[in-house]
Amino acid sequence: MRDQDTLSAWFDVVNIAALFVMSMTAAYFFLAVGLGVHQMRRHRTPIGFQADIGFGKPFRRLRDARPVAPGAWVVYFLIPCLNEEEVIGRTVSSLVAPRGWRTQIVVIDDGSDDATTQRALAAGGDQVRVVRRRLPEARKGKGAALNAGLAYVLGDIAARRIDPERVVIAVMDADGRLSDGAMHEVLPLFDRARVGGAMLAVRIRNRSTNLLLRLQDHQFWTLSALSQFGRISTDTVSLGGNGQFTRLTALLELGPEPWSTSLTEDLDLSVSLSVRGWHTTSTPRAAVDQQGVANLRALIRQRTRWYQGHMMAAARVPEVLRSNKMSTRSAIEMVLYLCVPWIFDLPWSVLSHLVILQTVLLVADGGFFTGGGGWLLVLQIFAWYLLSFWPALLTAVLSKRRVPSHTWGHALLMGHFVVVSNYLSFTCAWRALYRILTGKHGWAKTARLAEGQTLPAPVIAAGGGSAARLPAVRRPQPPVVVWRRWRGLVGAGPAPEWRPEPSLTVQLRTDRPLHWRDLVELPRRLLDPARAPPGRHGVIPQGRVRRDAGVTLRAPRTSSEEAAMPAPRCRRPGRHRGQEASGQREPVPARTRERW
Image 1 (cartoon, rainbow, N blue to C red):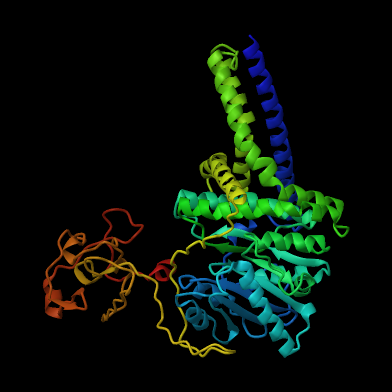
Image 2: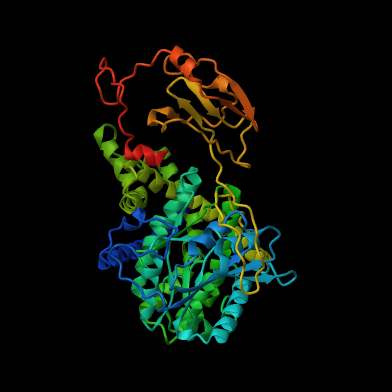
């Protein structure tokens, strides 16, 4: 009897602690999300607005945006790179500004072993400057690389006599791309004198690859983005490492090296700016995309580094509380954000399982669902589900509104997977705590995935760069089989084992324009023409065959061979069965021409 009373007392303590932790967390998070929705309404921007914008053309103004004078601000894009040849070309080419804009792309090569520098120079031309760091000075963290890039910027504005008050520093990851019209949305934020930094919402570019990437996109695009918009109300938006904009004069207040050597130098920069009275903000009308981490082990390693940096940043809470340049609401919000791993992730990882254990014991003892059977039991189970999973249902609604193209099934799935993803957070939080206690502060760079990119013609690099002459990199093309008048196999590619490099181009010469029915795309793993599907009439007539560079080509038949073949009888699209098409061909639809 005494043991049962002791166990009951322990469970009461667990319930009180769990209720406190969940109440604090839910109040903070959903208050931030609610304020984020309110901010979007203030900007007269629908929640799903960003789902419709493209990426890669930041200087092209959106239709309803207020234009920014190209010469009003001087923008330096800092891109720290370490072996980024797979992605740097597309990032740099997307940041090349049209005539009239005063921008410069500064690529910080942090001791790369590949062709990162050459690809950046080839993609950006005379708008690119490369800051090369060599070992042993290189590879000491992203913060050290950014400080080296800032040193170049300071020397450049001194040589060109640029007013530091009109300079904005934009930090981009090597795989990052700004949304269309982003420059016209971000730069006006700095018209407010106390705005020292701005951060954009993050979208995962390769989110359609697997479930893990979809979950990351849901976390970044729905949960994190809306809570960041809510922090606009307190002027404490947390700066990230990709899509980060800062005022140069605000950085100079922090000294010649504003970025720290912390594992989360961006979070440290946010705190440093806030305690000095600078405001950090965002806009719901612009975003930045990047690659997600497709491998679970690599994702755990990345999130462990983030958690470790976040947990170590909690040591700056006294500095926030002592600051007399922050408002009360800004200081409270900043303290709560810095303490999230300590007051939620670590305690809840233990309390949640104790609550589950208590629930299992009550169900086994028959004291949990007391309504007997029938509909009353169903209602009790439904009420328990609503009380336990209401955060998942709420995030599902937010996901559907954030990306209207998602089905309700997809939104509900993502909402419930957030509950499962808590175990990823628990794992990373405890691994981070272990690394803090054991004094481990090293980090491993996340590898990038190769992307198709096309580099421009050879250019001459300016300002300390060298001439870069690289062959154009073509996007891998799937094999295409072209049919002529439904009967003859004209070209097929590539044979037996298809590889992305080198890519294949098939050029056709015909005595008439190809009809849209003549083009049929076959699966990638086409080994030889014999495996092609039968023609319109079930048989592929044999023709003269010649071989050229591993590609099987069937030459068009002569006029005598064409005359010997019976003319095919087919019907036009949209006609009823039995109505034959006339001999005159209808024009190719515009949508079909664009697709082919």
